Amino acid sequence: MITCGMNSRTSKGVIAAVLLLWSLFLSPFFLHAEEQGEYIAIRKQGGGKIALVLDRAAAKGGKESEWAQEFDKTVKEGLGFSNLFSILPPPSNVRAGSDGKAGGVNFGALSSVGAEVYAGGAVSKKGGKVNIDMEVYDTFGTKLLLKKSYSGKEEHLRSLGHAFCADLIELLTGKKSFFGSKIVFISSKTGSKEVYRCDFDGHGVEQVTNFRSISLTPVLSPDGRYLAYTSYTSGRPTLYIRNLQDNKISSVAKNGVSVDPSWRNATELATTLSFEGDQEIYLVRPDGGIVRRLTNSKGIDVSPTFSADGRQMAFVSARNGLPQIFIQDMQSGLTRRLTYSGRYNTQPSWSPAGDKIAYSTWEKTGEINIFVINADGSGLKRLTSGVRENESPSWSPDGSMIVFTSNRQGGKKLYVMSSNGENQRRLLQVDGDQMQPSWSLFR
Amino acid sequence: MRTVKPLLRSMFIPGMLFLGACCCQEDVVVAPEVLPPPVELGDIFFDYDKSELRAEATQQLQKNFDWMKQNATGTLVVEGHCDERGTNEYNMALGERRANAAKDYMVNIGADPARMQAVSFGEERPFALGHDEASWAQNRRAHFVGQGAAAPAPAPAAEAK
Image (cartoon, rainbow over the protein chains, first blue to last red):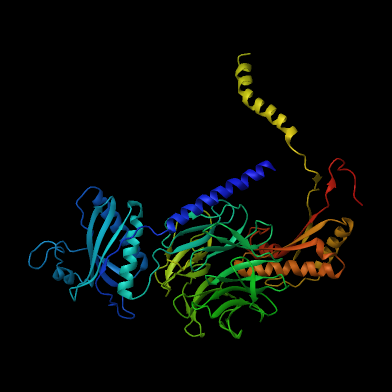
């Protein structure tokens, strides 16, 4: 009995520490930004990659040079991860103006290497903090597109780099990006399935739960305030909703299963409950109270996912026998079948950036593959093939990428790809199986 | 003799710890009840993606009911399991349907639903670890764990009838 008490206290301490660290991470550090310049989306619709020359920020040596190097590395990796750019090495005479005056940007040299955009700047130390002045030019129009200062503590250098990446992508594409977003997932690294989280690019992996039970299907609320997940700590699969600010945990106090939650907005989530006999989808509040029942059909209804405006819900239903994906209008309750191709379609994920739904199909070959389809049933496209089981798709907040699980190299691991299926690669290197990733919506 | 001395010395700390633990014993309040070990009652199996009972399953369910009659205050956990194929979330729901199908049958033949709990494990706890039909067939199952009533602590031998 005594050991048992100690264990739970220790694990509570660990969880508290993890969450404290997390909240520190989320709290906005002092990011002082001066913006001057135009907001222009110069990227043509459907255009190829943006040819960018990224020049290492100038520094006077010492600490500043170290910062410049790290900033450059972060920005390069971040922009590389987005898959939007082809990053060109800066020509040697890039900082010599055509008039021979040092400090200016040599647009002639940039054009000759085929650069469309040039980004460069200078690193300095201001009041003990890192200060990075960045400039972005359109090399053909020789026009200044962005001039902005990024300053913060040294330990936030990575975030400064990502802030610049976010600004650059928003400037060039007119859309918000995923920098600063998080991915929550399940890992069996410790031997039992626990909730973990990491940055959008797989950096900073942290264990969130330490229940030594089975935890499943974690998902963050759109504002990042709550984490919902299913866990067996009570002996049966129960939905828990943890407030990440005060650490309070609510659960849905109903008999039967409660599995696979999904947030409709910051104040409502949907999950499957079976306390009335059949597995049906219900709308639930973060305090665990039930708002209303959404589905009413014989057979399994599971895995809800919502359109960005929260007006429509896609979900899996076995009402016709085998599992297929359906869409329900939240106001009228009218429901239509979305998928007709394939006998086993599950795990829908609605893109936050449009009317596209990704899902997985268990195919006749035994493979599980990820498909994407428009909400009106058109435009069906297979994104994975020939590489075993690919499951659990989840969109990045800007809809440009998808994170998913694949066992193409043996165990189940997390992968990312562009929304059109290109550029599939491992997200992170962690022992054990990784599964059920969910990309946060908050930035 | 030379080896005995270090041996004794090495046993000093564990010995003291053992004595300490013995002294602690007095402070510990002895649990008032002793639960008999849980009884595994045997499995029933299901067809692929199905939660309907097979004809042969009824025999095992009758045995479970007999156990509940013999253990008048005992409880029965009905676990629903799936094979590894398909996706986890859907299998969580399917596992529950399997557990409920078994439970509902037993309730129909007279078992007390208040003493039974259906729990789905989806594909989380496979029995056989292979990746072929032989393993999958063993994993599409309902598993029954009986828990006899607690006996009074001072006389665990006394049987509650």
